[in-house]
Length: 199
Image (cartoon, rainbow, N blue to C red; front, side, top):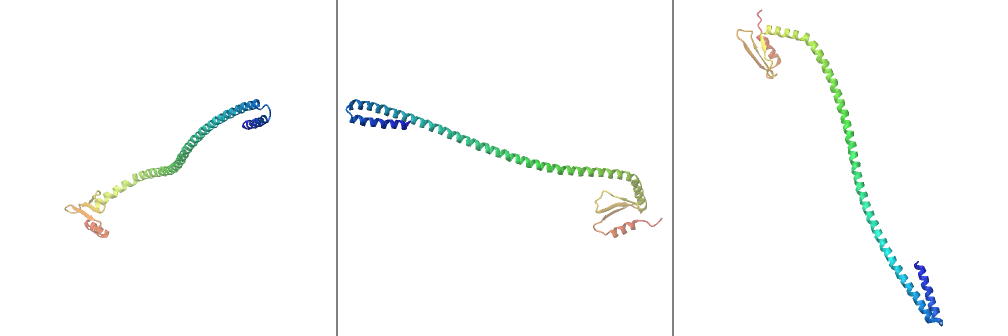
């Protein structure tokens, strides 16, 4: 459009030159000047419109730039949030795997404990059956030893001590021997010495 106006302006200039060389120069010159003035007004109007269009375009570009910046910022926020969610998901998966491993270990321990419990129950049942036979014979042997040795043992004393009371003589004789201080042979000989050989 601007090119057309420039061509028109050149044409007017040519017309002016023609008029200046012709006889009717004054009328043609006025006509030409009016056309030139109209053309300049048109050019100024076009320039004003072009400036307005450029300002509008710059405003639109500025708005687009702001929108792009806001979109980029929102994209970064979303990306950060996504990375956080992915990390939480990885942590949850690792925790789940760890819990599954712990569950397997605990289940194995529980199965082992059940097996041990069953074995203990079986052994307990067997020992209950055995004690019905063993306990009477053990009681019999304990009474027999007491009748032969005449010693009442103190079973509540420290395990390193051998304590009791011997009733074999005219008076009761306490027994207190520290097994850490004497040999087994000495203790055995001492206890045998308490027994009476008279029948």
